[in-house]
Length: 319
Length: 319
Image (cartoon, rainbow over all chains, first blue to last red; front, side, top):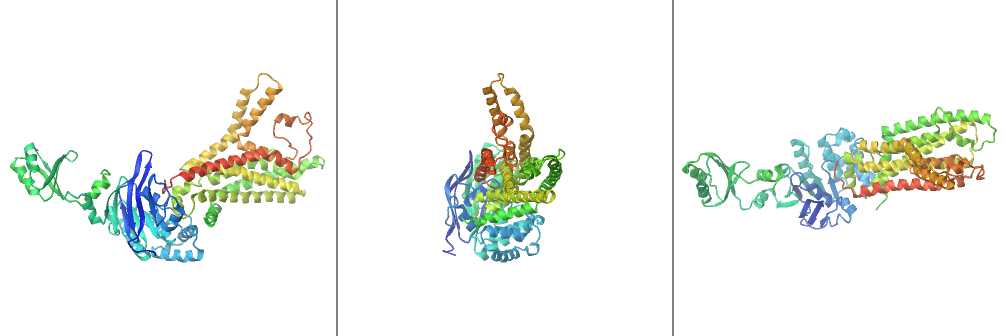
């Protein structure tokens, strides 16, 4: 392996993809270092797959450029595909061939000599736990087995980088856990850089060294999972949501006048008042409401964390 | 880029065909019908050979063209079933790989994209070619054994080139169905589209041309208007690939056919003082050369369109 751990393996600068009016990926700039596991997180339709296709040279960027392992994938897609293994979100195998035959086909396409490939296939199938089923037709495999076979399929060409698009899609929690641990173990063992995309924040946070939050074609934040919240909600330390029976201007004015309050706004959707402040002012709000003769219907403090990121960006889809 | 990966794909495709039920069904249909037609041809030949003087030239070629009225001849069977074979082998070439998710897996390997579509075409053609050659040689061999007629070298050449022309004809339909398999996501749609075109040309096209012909009949009968009408009708007929193929095979298998230009000329041999003697093989080939060129051109056009569309398509997993 050339270079140090700090080398960047994937560099995207201003990468943009437009489909007519729709901007699928909007000026994405990202650097992934050698040997790290990077999670590209975002809700469905955020442009993750499109980004990955552009990195592989399977789709042409409308603007900007990508550099993967020192190669421009748009100009030299073949060279990139030699160095990068790609596992699609819903990987397909030739159903009437067995696992070994499928792997051998991939190996031949990568011009690996047959005897070498056969040994490698056996070794990898052992690693992903498919040794016993390796002579069964892939048509009989379960979803989890397919994903594991997919991993072996990606690894057989000994790539420098592996890109996994939604590898956990459709797996049960146990299967997800196993697969993620497998990915982590294999990448450490083989010294590979891993880029994985997912919309399951909770599932991938454990294995990723770094994650990037990707919403509507834009990278909103990157870093380790803990720092995401800080990046996304830098000023908003505490959010308090409350409902009161009669919200007079005076009462709201008084709340606004409290120390440390950033803003107080009415959210019509949830019929709640949302207050942002630097410190916990729950008791003050309650006190003021009572003093003004209003009944306090609900009062709760809101933390910013993974769940908030999830709610804000993933489930609603609206930022 | 190394050509070896191309042959890896071809090999896999050929193996796929040889393992598929579909191929055996198609080959079974064609085998049975051809043997049936051979049987009737043999019985027709022995009666006609006994009746007519022994001077009948190219008696052996009649094995392919003669029928006793109950079962069509080898020639008309191939004209009719050839397209079905082409459509049958090509209609799911691209779209089924796409639906199974294997296309994106192949394209993630260091393989130029056009290898996939080229290999599909070459593999299908190789399979059909081998089959036709085997079938032709089988008919020839059986003919020699049963009738005891000796096969002249010229007849052999004519039959061989006839088989080659059939291959070109089937290649046209193969390419048409590969085109549909690139265009339509569902294999069933592609198959239906192919069959629709096939039925159109083999059943409806003649009727349409006839109808048009009735409408276009010149009101004034002069030599000029007649010839003009004749050439328009000829042009319309020749838009149909099966008509072109019919013309090519007629010249090859009926050595006495010496013109394809006009039915007036052909039916008035004596008037135009065209000798009734058989042409040599090369001259027959020369007569049908424009038709052959047109058939190859049509094949190439279909292939070029599918190639162009396929190269520009975005390949996502299973979509």
